[in-house]
Image 1 (cartoon, rainbow, N blue to C red):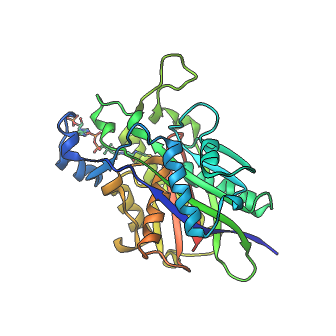
Image 2: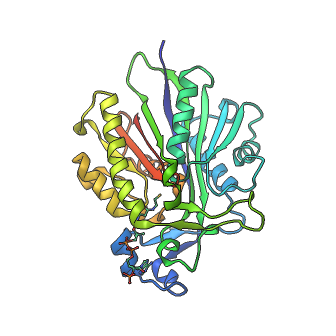
Length: 322
Ligand code: COA
């Protein structure tokens, strides 16, 4: 019997503090008009001190388990994608494990910046299909507000905080095509200097802030994501018309619209949260997915294409039948 990873439940968490462009413009040399025109962002959520990656990841994971009708006893492993962990170790995934009351299985953090959730899905899917786990939480949780350079208006207006999670459950893949159909992940380390954080705990007294060459990232994002989308469809013998929903990484409305056009999808088939969440990095795809499932847009049977690209460069796609 072939095993498939079924997307059994999704969950989300956003800090209650909402920061509008106008509020940012009080301390940063920018304007609501500039931010909206170049990015589509209207507001973002910023975490309070207690809202760490572990805290938010736990809340999103709890919601995903509840949506799946699962409990802590069903969790064989936790993969948490983040660039803003609570501590160097233990892994943030293990703080989540403890908070959820999961007492067995594995857990680790995954560093692939904005592509982290897609990477996590890929790892979890391969483990499940190989029989190594039956229930895996994949979480993206980020507090980018803590790594932004408030002197750099070209980056500090682009990001927000939040967490999203999915619970994957091993299912029978012989009867239907429900579940993760494929994942593809890629990286090009030679492009590491166009988007990075210039420090970490491994560098004394240099926690680091985000640095980006926005134009270069934009150029690579459009090309690489278009390739990733075509690769996913070709691997499954599917065409553009088969896709019901695109759930793209939420970095910039212009990149999202370009991807929708390439797929020939009308705007109402593309899930957009960047206007309200800004770029929440590894959390952006699961947050958008959770929102569109919760409000009934994405229904059982829908074919959903997920894609993301971020620092590394790292990028990838996943094709999922709900
Ligand atoms: N408010 C007002 N003006 C700003 C600004 C801000 N927040 N940020 C930059 N500017 C100014 C610049 O100083 C520049 O002014 P100048 O022409 O007088 O020098 C001008 O706007 C254009 O800057 P530029 O960086 O060329 O703008 P852009 O059109 O490339 O847009 C981004 C900038 C960041 C919105 C765009 O490059 C982008 O979205 N890139 C991709 C980013 C991304 O997706 N990153 C995450 C991937 S995970």
